[in-house]
Length: 210
Ligand code: AMP
Image (cartoon, rainbow, N blue to C red; front, side):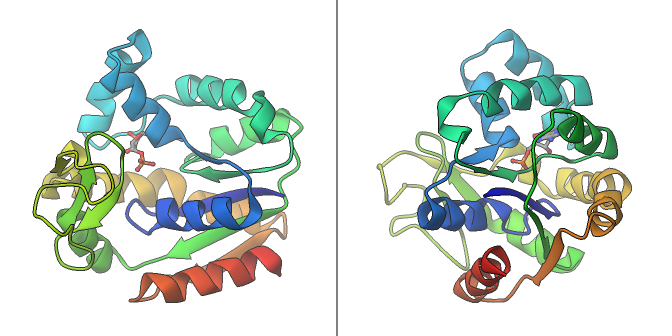
């Protein structure tokens, strides 16, 4: 099964991608994670992407399309995949179509902007393993320390309030048109993000199986 997860930054795509990945045993591909890894490793790609990401802007289409093309050619994608954070613009969706890859379903996780702002401002991620926490909804046992690996948990630079505002503006302007794009293909299923992550997960799995 080849799936796309759509939704604003902070709508919970990453969490849902992980659940589907564990349920269907297909890889979750996050262009954001690939780019963050490149920044951590100080590669040329990372250097180029960093200023866009820190400012809440999208990395240019050409760069992310190439990243995705390469990633989809790897063996683990041959039985299916979940795209988390790609496509984010209509040209990216068109590029995916041109790769001749069948998309079975597009799941749009909808969460109002006010909730997103509250969620992202409290989000903390582990610098070492990438595990995600929230100061209110999912605190680590010891503040600042990852439960999973003992690494340091920090606020992502792009989760600072001003950057979140910009990311949401960019989402509405450049990514939201994809809802129309995929509605026209008849593959879009909307999932209303719930207060409890488990409730959203139940709806997402239902959408996958529908
Ligand atoms: P994410 O972790 O998916 O929220 O992505 C973090 C940041 O990486 C975004 O705010 C963008 O700057 C960049 N990024 C990730 N995926 C894409 C994409 N498909 N197109 C453009 N920029 C992206």
